[in-house]
Length: 135
Image (cartoon, rainbow, N blue to C red; front, top):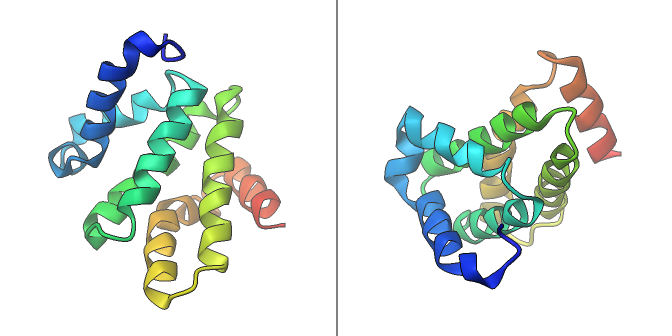
């Protein structure tokens, strides 16, 4: 249970895996990280916070990996209660991109949303989600 303090060392290891480029470069690592988004809503928020901290300093290739994580996690959670939490994280990135103070930060945030935007047109649920989040 990720709500208890006893799991803090495990959470630290999972968050470290999230920011490790080796996990993000390999298909198995990406699948593992997408699976983390399904474990707990609280863990999703912590994963999101870790990604947000990495966006300004990570390489563009890692930003696109984070974008793929959000898109895959949303697709995997579609229809479940945790989909709302993931949508909230995506919406937070959208708002931050619209209100970014620097063009570099706006670009980093847009990069993190690229795969979510790529879902548009391929899936009716994605179109609905994007329209609702940008409204």
